[in-house]
Image (tube, rainbow, N blue to C red):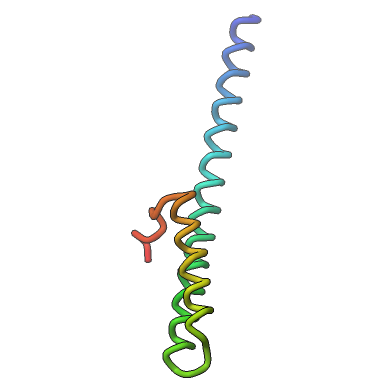
Length: 78
């Protein structure tokens, strides 16, 4: 009986770890998409005289930092 409970506990822990990984992956993809939108908005504003090159560069730098940390997987859905 103890062996069964130990295996069930291990399986539950593995499932929780997998769920946590998936949640973190989804959150990173969402954040990447938000940064990509911010870059697009900054670029659009700059090209239409409402923004600055500095704001566009800042948005690009934030996006590149995110890609360095989390990869560019979120770009496949863009």
